[in-house]
Image 1 (cartoon, rainbow, N blue to C red):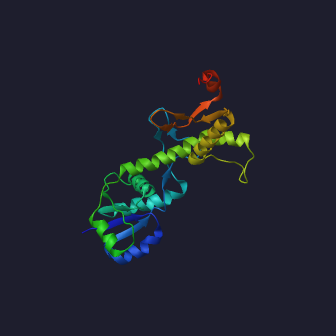
Image 2: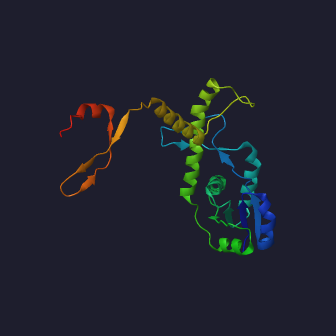
Image 3: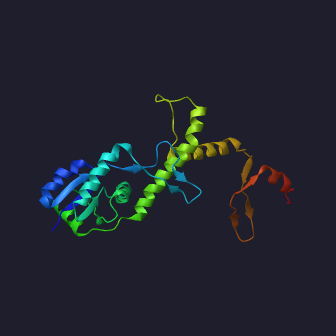
Length: 228
């Protein structure tokens, strides 16, 4: 039986995993993300369904070489980044750089215990593309908002300590909502009105009518002398 490769997100987990799994497994770490949108260009084809253009992070060239080399020595590669959308995206990006014939399985565990790890290895799954797409949508929004709005900020307001300021996908929308609401408040024109109530006596009983708010113009237009 050949060896299996387990790729985790953080190297801090490897020492503990070795105690559980023994010599039949070898371990590597991706040290987080290995690919991202290019640093010096937009990297998103808006005209073609917002297709992203990913580039290998310069500092991860050595990491990727180690992952490829280890994968060639093993029968199975278990991708074990964190069980969240970032971890799922990291696992997917790793599949894009490993050799095409690599036997890849996705495993995830919420705790580094022997029981949780062994259970995960016996229940591998496919990569959750919905989680991957959720992470991609967040990342693409970061890039779209940042590239479109940040230059405006740098032209309009004082630059920060690092020489530039940037706009975020959440803060920008929240600020727009605040500004729109403030404009509504400033444009509001108060109109005087009264609450009127009448107590009427009939042959059967005395009934109280509910108060009906009337705007000033409506009151002046509709009022007529009382008939006694």
